[in-house]
Length: 269
Image (cartoon, rainbow, N blue to C red; front, side, top):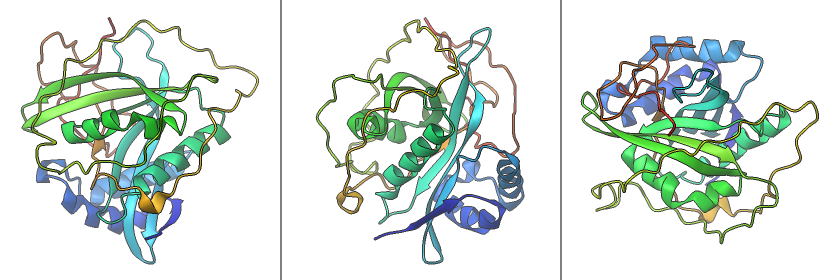
């Protein structure tokens, strides 16, 4: 099944309202908040959000925008924040397509050197963790993650940070298959001990365009099974206390961010 991609805007508010039914009630935002969010996105010169339609039916979307890193440092660097992603059942290949559109747009705006961050539920994190080779095709690799328990959500959440793959890095064997996140036993295993972030020399923004990232190999998206849906959200709401978690800096850069309650600032080691 194929779908047509377009830029996400206010006219798509009814589509997002309808797809919100896939979220737990506490994570739904409603028409008013979603409309305000999409209005703000439309006002940005840089638009990184996309939506997929099969004829008139919305089958997936991605909301992303520039923001400051969630790392608890004196001067957080600029990142691309994935606020929300959803792909309906039967159109799972659309996940790769949405991420590919984002990657291409970042390259067009000479932002391929910006890190990408997001906060997601545990099952979504496992999908990303288990299929890093797939996202590596787009030029990104998992640089760090941090898990914590959210009492209000009643589940474990995870912050992720993706870093551009260095040019010339040896490619790992690829696979297209993505295990469905809802499969039995997939969500019940505890997340293994998480790695801490190593100090990384921050890249300055070059005056000259960066060289192209790794070559994108063709992918047969129609034969690529994927997760039923992803939930990614913002990380600027009240902190739920967790061991060795720094205080959160309360900040909201746009209306209608997808709230995941206890998302913390992350302190690098």
